[in-house]
Each structure stands twice: as structure tokens, then as C-alpha cells.
Length: 58
Image 1 (cartoon, helix red, strand yellow):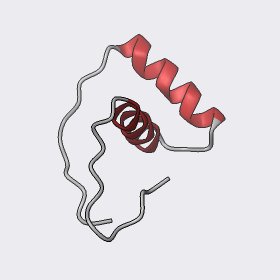
Image 2 (image 1 turned 135 degrees about the vertical axis):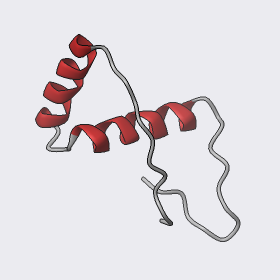
Image 3 (image 1 turned 90 degrees about the vertical axis):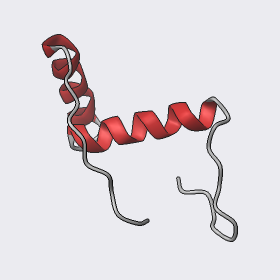
């Protein structure tokens, strides 16, 4: 995986608390949990375009 893009994300406090609990349950950081959930949503929507010659990341 290449460089990661950094950006500011503002979340409702209640949503963050729920994400924090969920990520803890799955032994991930909140950042990793959000990245995982976004990647899953992109794949489910059929918008994941694999780069030629690279295997899909799971």
C-alpha cells in the first residue's frame, strides 16, 4: 500500500463514541475501523477499481 492521505474528519460526539466502542471490540484503532468500514462500503457499492497486477486487499 502506498502513502496514506491525511485529512480532518469531524464527527458527532455520539457517533465517535460508538465507533470507539466498536473499534475496541474488534481490536482496532478508531482510525483503522473507519478506514475498514469505508473500504467495505466502497467495495459493496462496486466502486473498488483494482490496479492492474495487484491482488485485492482484504
